[in-house]
Length: 182
Image (cartoon, rainbow, N blue to C red):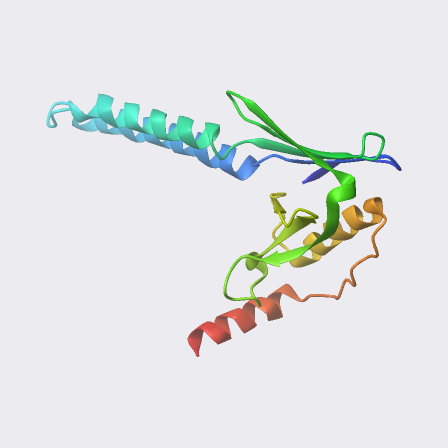
């Protein structure tokens, strides 16, 4: 997550899924390297009719990963226009969702799993007056960073800040592993 703008009237956050892009690039390069290695080493022994299908399958799968979940997301809070715009920009299209800032009731951590003590089970959510909740994908893993981001948004929106307790990630993970063994 990157804070693009933080003023009295504007708050703009951007998330780019670098890990996904790097992983997909590594997958494509690794696939072609393996195919070339097999071709050079075993071309006289192996019938290589499967190679074009293998390459085509990997190109389609990689393109799907880059197009669908590999989108850049920009969250733009704007007090001048009383709006929150969420822009999801992919390779082929851009989708923009608009919400009124006045409709935002709360910003807090929301559990998305059964194990409430696991840090990866919490995500940042914006609760609207309509009863809808918007989950923000900012690529943040640690609960402390999520709480800092929540407080940044709450401060901008004029809401009281959440108490940020010092969270020891190692003890949280050890408690998680202990509860799984019981």
